[in-house]
Amino acid sequence: AHYDGHDIAQGAMDNASGVAVLLELARIFSPLKSQLPRTLRSIAFAVEEPGVLGSTEYVKKHRHELGPVSFMLNLDACVGPDPAEVTLNGFEDLRSLLKGFAADMRYQFGLNNRIVTASDNFPFLMEGIPSINLTRRGRDPYLGRGYGHTAADTLDKVSEVDLRESAMVAARLLLRAASHDGPLGRRRNQDEVRDMLISQGLEEPLKAQDKWPFH
Image (cartoon, rainbow, N blue to C red; front, side):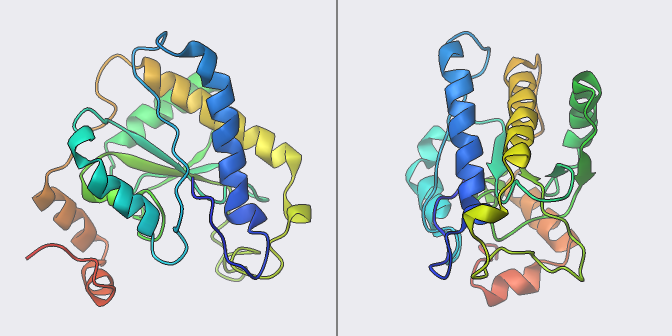
């Protein structure tokens, strides 16, 4: 989750809510350290809003550690009026795994396969690491992005019930991911990452942002 926001408001929904859920997950899983088959690492990134800079620098500096990383869960704007939704970011092979988790949890969350390029999942995606986003923000084009990035993104907009539900969904997902016997998703090579981005029409937009590393 990223802890920076725009200085026109408190950034309560985007993204203090994500950091609150991240801290709750750290509290929940801390007593289970060394008891789960997989290691969980909690990270709060800075400088997401100006261009996903904090997580990009993290990936650059920790690239030598990323070999064993099998999965990344990004918490960005995970409160709101809509049910929880998981974005697969092109890792379509995660769909059946997550649907199985949802059935086991008896909690049906939405699944979509669009690639998010403006959040902290993106640098991990570019390394081919299966990366998903958990959000509660609707995608109604008439509502835009809601309160996010506006002066109205203040603490009074955040529902405690939403926070509790998002933490519950994320915790139950992570518990199953950390206990799963087998791969969580197939890691992609650079050619496959490029093809994933091209398939969703992202080559030109990323070139315009100087974020296209392929030749």
